[in-house]
Image (cartoon, rainbow, N blue to C red; front, side, top):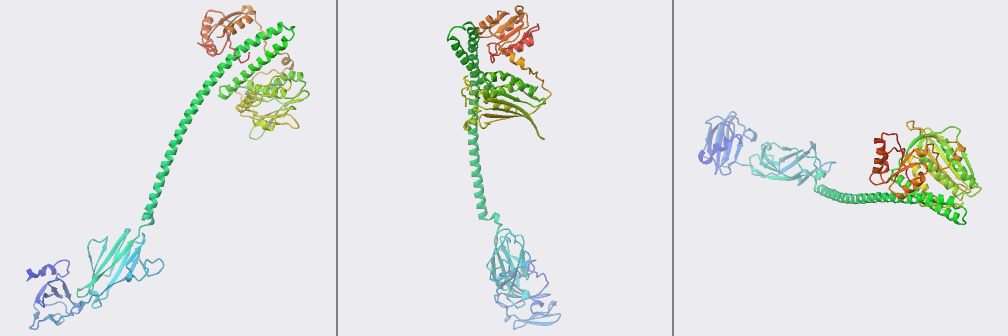
Length: 611
């Protein structure tokens, strides 16, 4: 019989908790076997293979049954004895609890807090047993579910099995335990199942509840949609940024190329302009110097002197314009660097003042000078500052009518932070219109006729003046001087640097008045000295040879290379050289003379900037 019904397989399997001594087996109704062990009576169904146990927990008051103490009578009543007496069991009419008692969810704990329906912060919107879907936040992942079965016949013998879809792979036997715990549930959808069996191991039913653990807002679908949109916008913006950057880089590259080409063109134009201006000055020199000789020889011919003066004025104007333009180009290109030296600004201003006193007398103007009582030792480019004062005073004299006044004033100003030299030039001339004040420093912006009948200026003097002052880190302002005239204010930083040499100053008024510009004393024994003239222009060479040949021995060369060869062979006292020449220019020639010539020679160089 054990082979047929496999009693051992069910009774002695470790999962059935019936590891007891089997004392007796009796056949009951159809498909039923009654088994007696040392502690309980078992009912085994051979079809369903269910085992029902009867002991002291469900109505049987006997314990510790004796071996061979079980007997079944003719009425199929089973008699057996135990430690407390004898018991009888009617196998034919033995009632079993077959009612299907429903399962009830009793309590819910979330993060160890009991949830009450409609309570603040509760996850329950209604009674827990009536809830079909439970929704939890991402931080409500520790839950405890309590349940029971409505079978009240030996309720402690009710048994349960549970399973959580998504967590448990198989059904878990909870025996008679009525609470199940889950912790750290991940966001997702779960379904909790619970099955119950009553005291007679009859199936009571199954109940389930859906549990949804919501993800945090940053990993929900709409959050990922936002992330995707943001990433798309970032990528889109980055692509636009890269395209714009590449376009700007391309445009910048094109502008750099254009600027480079413009600079190259400007350089070529400046070089061409310098060369052309240089070539202009050569014939102008050949016009002015012979013109002076002609004027001295034909002074009595009627009408000729006036014509010669007209020619001279226009030639001088053209030469001055060329000189000013070349100075402006040098300053704008940055090649004309400041040649700084130390000098007394008071004495320097007096020199300029004495120079213009003769012009003031000729034009019947009152020229006044105001200087501090103490010396003003300062560091400036003396020649550049001379150009500034000459330009400004020339304009003041030019546009001040006879009987007017021109004031030149120099003062100093000291503060805690800095020291300044203030220069002020006032006149009682025709003044400047307000619209012209803003453009007066532009090259060629204004060029008006002299009130005293002389020719007008080149139109670049004030532009050169402002550039020189700015190179000295100063400022210049021009305004009308009510009721008439113009007032010019210049502010220069008062700096004295001992490392520069001190320039000598000639302030004797009589010496200045007697000085004849363009002539110089020659304290030498003339005919014993030899001068080497170096120029690639034969007309200049012939003219200079003719003029200087009266007093000196003259040698000529057409370029620097030829001049160096002659210096090795001849005893030459003075070298007068042009700057721009083929083979070797004048600057390189002077350098080589200083490096290679060991005899007593006084090398010199001239430039046609001052004919």
